[in-house]
Image 1 (tube, rainbow, N blue to C red):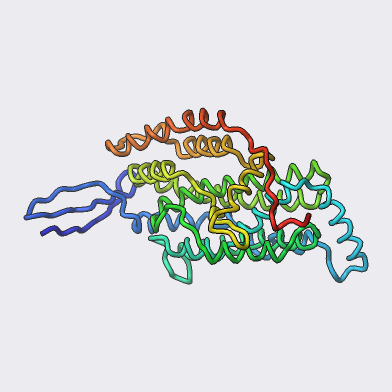
Image 2 (cartoon, one colour; image 1 turned 45 degrees about the vertical axis):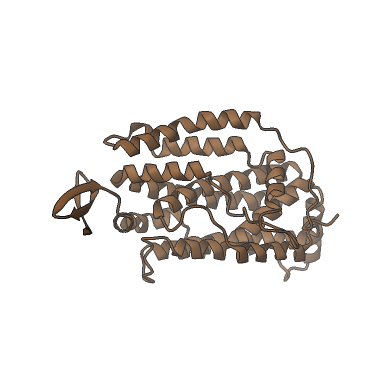
Length: 353
């Protein structure tokens, strides 16, 4: 018969968690990260830093700050000006912007997924659910703003775009994290950094094409994503402080699976799941909005951010995981250098001819 219990205690400002396995009165101790206890341990840090990572609602920007106001006498002139600027955007840039918007609008999926993570307390008064709700509230503005811009632009078949959005939410997604908080927060660290890159590049390209309004909009969205990335990276830094071996194993596992984008099930009407996603990423690669090189650069930044090279007192599995992660950027760089930009444009049902 095997019984399993655990206990935890503080040592050198670190949380030490021990699983105790007892079999036939023989006991052995294995240092192992009890995810829920670690999440509880760093919860106070998260609550303390929330005002740094998320902005006060009353003073935060809202979509109406950027868009034409129907109460103004020059409302229709402002719309014509918006449409004139949007007309100059390249086909690929409109396609990427629509894909980004659909991704942002699938927020109900991401909120429900985070709420199911082990260690995310369902306490309505505080804790991790407070973070999930407030992060969701801040993220929701992104899809609202971009959707309204695209509607006013006159370049988008809104019904086809809305069908894709509904499909993406209905289909859900599988990012390979299960309910593990370590894998989930490693994923969000990576993904928020990737989203920051994407919105920032779209802002630059929109400015190049003469759409200063869209450039400003994507710029403020990118700034939000940068703060969110900072938060999730800080959460994992705290995890690494108290449970480095399991954090590294989780990181290695995520990188072996590859970090998939949250919209990888993206499709248009009449298509199977994920069929249009590759065309969306092809457009992003052609424009340089988000590329294989960016994927490698984000990995390198996380290795530095989490100080993986200097971690001490790792066990054998932790060392093997670190070795894999540390060697991965060079291998991925060689692969990225051999990749060629897709040359053929796909005709999206989202965009008016």
